[in-house]
Image (cartoon, rainbow, N blue to C red):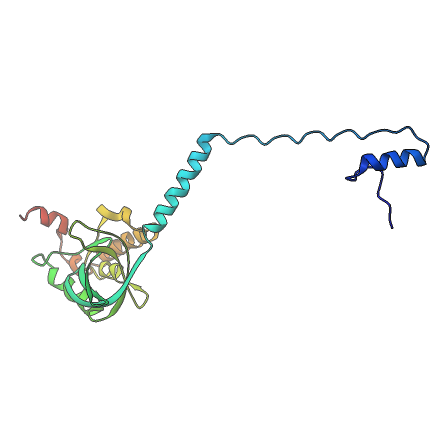
Length: 206
């Protein structure tokens, strides 16, 4: 059996005595190891900042964690519809867009465009809140396509910048770019010289 070295072993002191006897050397004892420096405590302000960051990330994730899948059974206008889920109806307000009101120019065309795209179809809604009318506000997905975005691309809705902070940054950029291109190409409502945004139109109505 291989013998342990005289030092660096858990039984170093006992073995030192034996080694000293065997080699006729004065017995010495190993010096205790220097105490391990204690780790500096983390300042409370850093801990609080870290916890705040984690909480913010958790809330941001859960703000977009809900989905709903159902059949579209009614199109009210270019940005509002109703889906049926397990025999329960849910009104949906399309997130990030604002379509012309029914009595506005292109109000009817906007509704028809949305109706042709998804009425009677099975869709998925990624949503993050309900509005003051109790409607679910979210992004409607059909066959992997963002229907909200398509309404802007067709010139059937504005990018609703007043609520753009509720969108994912990527969607926010896509919607803004889609509006720019639709306006440049005079799609839909952009054929008018000065189309009135629906949020301005609503201010003139009781």
